[in-house]
Length: 109
Image 1 (spheres, rainbow, N blue to C red):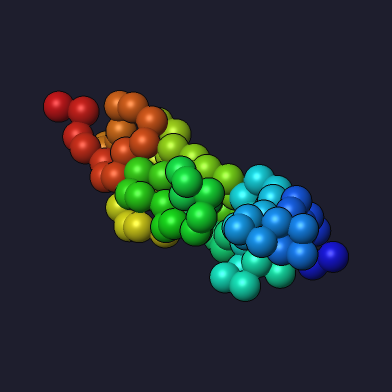
Image 2: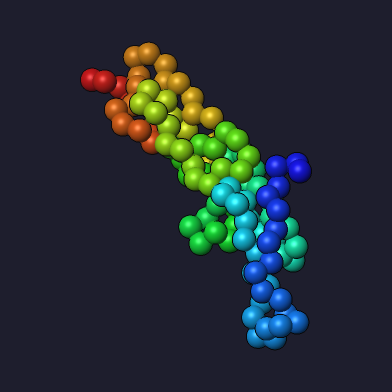
């Protein structure tokens, strides 16, 4: 199925003139603008808080796989300085990070 979740219509315009067709997409997917199918968010993006669009991951986070429902924080010792990062980069000695979700490396001293 190419990684696209099947679309499920919850209401029909034939039966409910004032109710738009509802489309429920699985985690990491959003509805196409015509509401005919769901599409997974691409690498470096995740579903927005209101579930309407795929948004780029902010610095300090990443989304390696397609269909991610939320961006993951970079672990200690790694960073992502750009928006829409797919991977976190390792800090080069002697620089590091002291917490998860860093957007740059710092020195220990």
